[in-house]
Length: 279
Image (cartoon, rainbow, N blue to C red; front, side, top):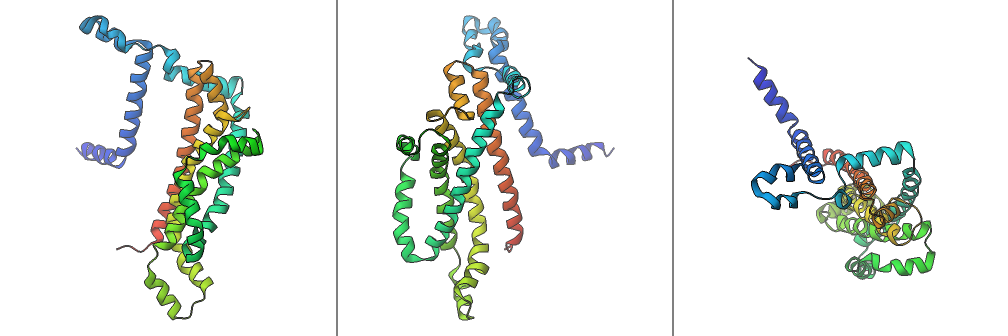
């Protein structure tokens, strides 16, 4: 008799996962049907020749099963993807870490020191308003098409959201906290360590989450124009030769990697929320 309430409770506890997985499965089935002509055959008796619009050639969009076969071949049979993954991962880690090392101190300093902020903000605003990929031809001229051209592109795309969030984190701190700390004789270093830095953590994590996506864009854009290996380069070559299954393999790798990194940052954001006082 209690089976129905227990089932309902289980569904409510897992509703997000169930609905998300169902939507993904339904989309994959619909996609597979487009490439295999299932829907064209199903609609043909009803709408006649117009049903052919529901038949799409796999060369244009591939299919979930073909992409799965390409994954198996590239990872387990030929192993051709591992070199590209190693190259792209190296570029990503270097560019992202350098961006963090520059952006966080820069943003915190600009938020804390008014004169430094006046000097830095015009450059941040100008760079933010400029598509950083426009610098790619110059970057290739300066550092060539090797590793560092992609590192620089990733750095330029990633440094802005992190720096801007770091700057905003300082400017949004309640000034009453700073006045109270100063009135009790706290030094500037103690104020920074005990008030500014802890209050900035949520903003910094948000900047990192935004930077993850920007860095993924940097990998693809940099390797499209200036590379001889990497996931972006593989996507470019596969697209030029109409190997759409390999294109989707590269796109899925980029998307899944970004989602994985963002989820790690989100988990840390939830830990930070525990520290913050509740209203």
